[in-house]
Image (cartoon, rainbow over all chains, first blue to last red; front, side, top):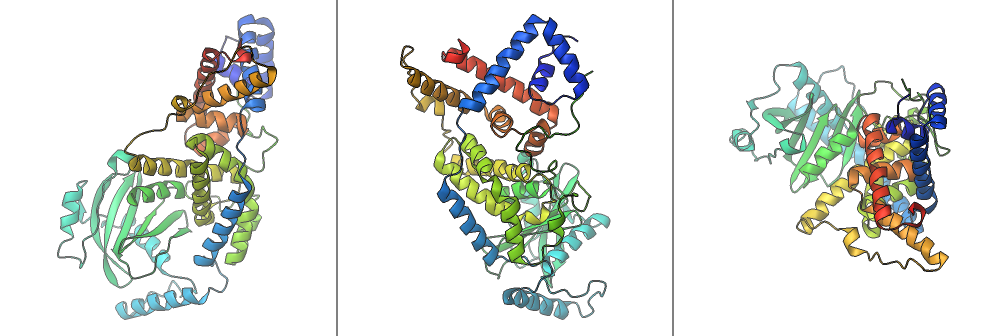
Length: 248
Length: 216
């Protein structure tokens, strides 16, 4: 074996398999320079572990976190099959009314569930946009092209932002029909993944929600008078990162 | 050639499988140890499960946030926000290593937080090294020397550039494996390894230049 700092450090970090360990130990016993390096880094490791501060959470933080979680659970219950609280029934009823008014014949393959159908619809819409040929009505990475395109097609003007420098380039927009109303769909790309952002004027109270199904994640937030749903097959963390860019 | 262990389990703190923390790339419905995830039926049990699986990593979350923000109040704000975010995304948690999953949220929240703070303070970044006096008498009593060592070590770690600092904290203070750290940071384990190596060298130079006892 040649002197390799990488291997010595991996050995120090107990990241090697048994065969490699034997080989490194063999080398260390015969190589003075590597052996010195190893001893130095081992001392440093021991020193960090024994001496560097470990910042444990102060007791009041634990209480604050518990309290905030309970509050969040009470504010935004996400029933996954249990009986939903009345306010979810109210939301579902409102949405179902809108659906039945706008779509006289509702597709039957999705039986009405006791949970809110909106996130399901958001995800379905996203999937539909990917399998069809209708991802973009206005293909453009220029927010000043995409935004005016919606003029006269919607009764609101959507906020259009580009995050190309942060790795989420805008690639265009399209008109979408969702839950009985026309909405703006803004399309972003993340590596090989597509993110659809649906936005329309919100009437609902402020709430933040997330939804995951079949490998798709949808994230909801409100900003000003607008409501937003972002949906993609990227990880929920990346989608959250995207959301935080939007909320800036 | 040298092979890394398949299993990333090195530390006594290991508490589960390798993290997924990702809703999408992993098609396995649930990791094999995550039985309870399948039976969540009510908001109450969702909260209970979250408290059971994720809340125990509060100290790790705080430690990482404190090292990343270098400020007590910011660290607490970040932790609180991280927990709320993690709770929102709990449905996408597929079982496995709750610690790596949570720390990924903490790390992202730190970045969001820093961007926000930077805008507020018109781009002035806090430089801990510039704010901390580094005067320690070489011939002071043992206790003082020890306190000095601790302070120098803290300062040297705190002044590492962020990519090096975070991997060092996760490796040495959180005792996480290369693979777990790779999950949290979103880079290959090889990158974790090289960042860790550079962190150690920089730390050594910093400690030497500040005349640390154990490096004399």
